[in-house]
Image (cartoon, rainbow, N blue to C red; front, top):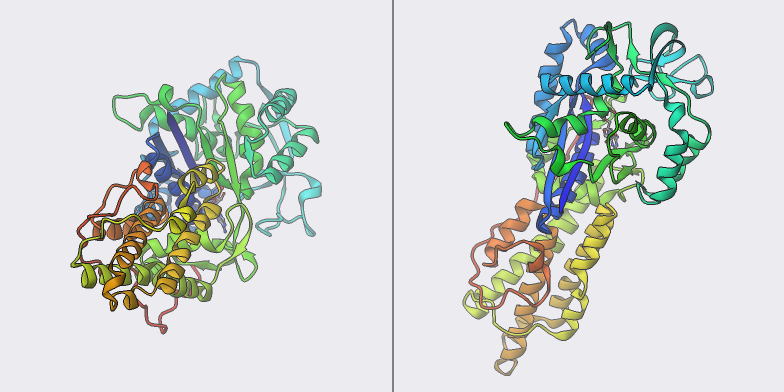
Length: 510
Ligand code: MSP
């Protein structure tokens, strides 16, 4: 089956920070897992380059928007590579191919009678690229998110008849109770819809950095409309000479954070309906990464530099930490201290040390061959149904809960080794079979855990599977009892070496 998933496309008005990395890594875990399952996966990420957020940032820096976009798009691309994201394409909304399809789709919406001329009068936040109602503003006519003073705007532009889609949207929600997850976000979006939908401006007359409105080139297409359609346009040109639209549209999953819920869960399906296109199958909305109780964001200056963390601790450690520390779907705080604690106790001890001890014992007591013995039934029972459970959780995009399921087995293996004391068994010749069973069980458990952990920690899992002499990591190899016996082990090295305490991953103001 085809599985098409996306991250938001990030604004190039600033550099990437951990908040962006968070979404990309979470989506990458799902992409990698689906590939393990044998699905035909297409994974998209990229950058949102038009509109006021970028035009104004460029003006502040005194450079043309194109220059700022080129510079920062490159950084977003590099950070995706650096976190080992396996995106199949990186879209930039300044791509000519994207712009051409946006032009076409917007024209179709107009032909279909969903666009009309009108006058917008009200509040607009250029940083959000969003229109605000009176009740949304905070004291002093400020944007509640960016805390900047907004001005009232009056502008003639083109409107999208969102109000006409009220019923169809309500029906979409009624027919697909899991189309927006988690359920609290579904309810939030639905009550927004039920509160009554107002038409919104589809174009902007004040700026020129964008896709010209095809029938009125004095205006540019509203940046959110331009941006949302990236999910659709990318498929038409991601592969040279090939159109992937039929194979992958509609998208299986959009992963976003709650800041852009309204655009994805309300505007987006309506825009697609207006253009006669199918709506995506699912949207998952996660929470915010917080530092010192505030949403991490460039404007607040409380960002943790992902490059710095990865240079010190490695990519897998960061990937693991982000999805372990904060329950995916909820807000949660991260800090250099909790990073270090998890790195040392969980990655270095629970997983890394267990692996080196197990391999060392197989080397010493069994000459480097994993005994071909059946693991104990008791241990096997603890792994029963695990791959199915992980699949089920990831079908619901529960990337932290799935990680926890797997991690519980890593802990269980540690306890098993402690309880069975293989180093004692090795001293007693009549315990040879028992020792075989213990070593075989631990090797098999480590193998299964590593196959399943691969989407979260690809580099470490691959190293360990190679050292265990069993490199196959498709999901059918995640059944306990199908695998490690008879394999020749090899050198592992330290998966998570100790990092000097004098170099914590500092918070840096970007
Ligand atoms: N360009 C729009 C999205 C268009 S999608 C068609 C945009 N860009 S953004 O650069 O502001 O990125 C917002 C997204 O970045 C969030 O939805 C989330 O995925 C991620 N995050 C940015 N900061 C974050 C946190 N502090 N915590 C969690 N996610 C964060 O909005």
